[in-house]
Image (cartoon, rainbow, N blue to C red; front, side, top):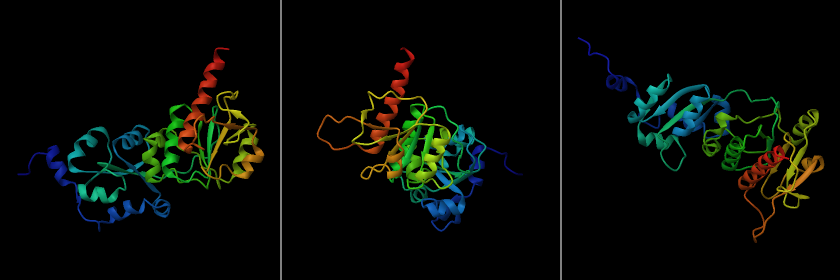
Length: 274
């Protein structure tokens, strides 16, 4: 007689990945490179926070990978196909400093092309560190910005490091990617909507705390050393700076972005009471 079904029996029926040679293991490792993400049209969400955000935002997920001890938790909260992975293989699959415990293979959906927004649009021009890109997406989400536009010369917002740094915000507010993402294309799109272009630069004309921020604008952040592209300098309607009172020469772009975003948000709040 067959044993009655139980959750414990069910977990043992799921195949366990215990080898680095497993085909799925190889696919996951490939997703750490831009080429692999393009080839498989997938990207990784690592850890509880990112996976929960993906599920809550109904992001298409092909498969969930976790240790056997975590199956019950995820089986209760989703109808996803679950694959058990040995802890050592999970560590190999991920490049996070600590074992994430769970990985989701998320579909790399078609880029969000719409520039229909009512608030500040944060543009990233030459921001090369994926950790900074993810942190800026998180900050933009936190302050209620209209979105984040990633130029082609910036780091991939769907790389594992960027997704981890976004702490789930990449699913709440998916980044906008234009067809070729060049400064010229971005400027043309802003001009078409009569959206003022603001650039952040160390030698800007006005402090971000004194500037009269419009509700709808495009704020462009550039490379920490080179700054924004020359095209944005020529097109800028305003050049904004963060005042520095100590001896440091500059701020990390992610820190600068958070300050500027909240200067914008605070300016809007003040204007409501004028």
